[in-house]
Amino acid sequence: ILNVEQSPQSLHVQEGDSTNFTCSFPSSNFYALHWYRWETAKSPEALFVMTLNGDEKKKGRISATLNTKEGYSYLYIKGSQPEDSATYLCVFDRGSTLGRLYFGRGTQLTVWP
Amino acid sequence: GAVVSQHPSRVICKSGTSVKIECRSLDFQATTMFWYRQFPKQSLMLMATSNEGSKATYEQGVEKDKFLINHASLTLSTLTVTSAHPEDSSFYICSAKPGRQTEAFFGQGTRLTVV
Image (cartoon, rainbow over the protein chains, first blue to last red):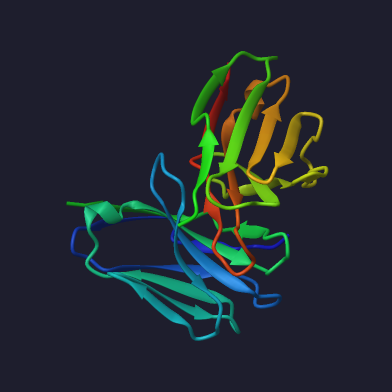
C-alpha cells in the first residue's frame, strides 16, 4: 500500500492569515508530485506539477516546495482570502505509463472573512 | 486546459436498480481513464483503470460484476453500478491524463445515493 499523508486534515483561518500544509510521500519511485485545489461541486483543478527535488513553484499567492529525498512537499498560501476555501489534494505520481495516481486525503481549508 | 465531463452529477436510485455514469474527454483522446470512489472523510481510492478497446483492470476488492466499465471510444468511458445497494452510495469521479508528463483532469464527480 502506497501512503500519501496530508496534514492538517482541516484548517480554519481568518482572512489575511498565511497558512501552509504538508504532504508526505514515498521517496522511492518518484516521478512527480501534484497539488490540486478542489472546490465543492467542481472538478479538482491542478495547481502545480512538481518533478525536481528542490522545485519551488508559485501561482499568485500560492506556492509549493518539493523535497523528493525526504519525501515531503509544502503548500503555502499567503494572505488567505475566502475564495481560497477549498480542499487541497496532494497526489503522488510514480510515472506509470497508464497514469495511475495516489491521493492524500486532502486538507480542507476554510477562510473566514 | 483539457476538459473531462462527467454525468450525472447527482443520482438517487432504488435499491436493486442499475446506474450508468459517463465520463468524456472533450478535447483530447484518452486511451486510459480512471474511476475513483470516495467515502466520507477518506481519500480518493482507485476502483479501476478503464482501457479503450479492452477489459478494465480492477483494484483488489472491487467487484467487476457489480461495477461494469466500458471504454468503447477514445473519449468515453462508462461506469455502471449494477443492482445497486445502499452501501454503494458514495462519490464517484473519473480522471484522464492527455500524456505522461501532464497533470490529470477530472470530471465533476457523481454523488450516488441508493435508497
